[in-house]
Length: 227
Ligand code: DX5
Ligand code: ZN
Image 1 (cartoon, rainbow, N blue to C red):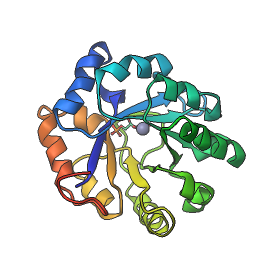
Image 2 (cartoon, helix red, strand yellow):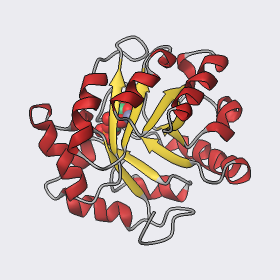
Image 3 (tube, rainbow, N blue to C red):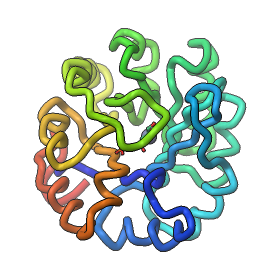
């Protein structure tokens, strides 16, 4: 089965607790938290206090996607706030600092990963492959929900899956941006195991049905019925 990580970017922020509890009630697998700094991307969202506030609200893993410059400055604070997965953009700092950021997350016993913007080639992931628990491939330009899915990212997903199968088969491959019931199947067929969905999940009346439709997709390396 494929797994789903609804992004709270499209939640009702005045009812965030209700919406985050709803993700578990509807069978979701992760809570995806989009952190933006207004510099790395032209938008501002939530940060450390919101992760901390959400921690007691859900037993699901908090999947924190940092769209911030020099994320090494904050990875430990996000882990201490309760993040289970912390992913950092390879474009946001030097290779040395990105490696150090992943190591800092691991040193605190949590899972770490990298993110690739649409214009960033597969080769940019190479120095980090063995250190990652998750790799996130953007299928929109990061910054905003509700954008159009970029199907031309599928070769990148396939190439990463092939490299990971060789060097780090346990690493999860995640896709983010414009994922809905129309676009999810090609993501999964291209090697994605975790699908981030913001607007497509939250605009649905029956969110549980949406989750079940994602779970019904047969993801690579994932036995049916459980992760
Ligand atoms: C975009 C964020 C995404 C976004 C996805 O920068 O990383 O997680 O919330 O939203 P949708 O599913 O609406 O494209
Ligand atoms: Zn995201």
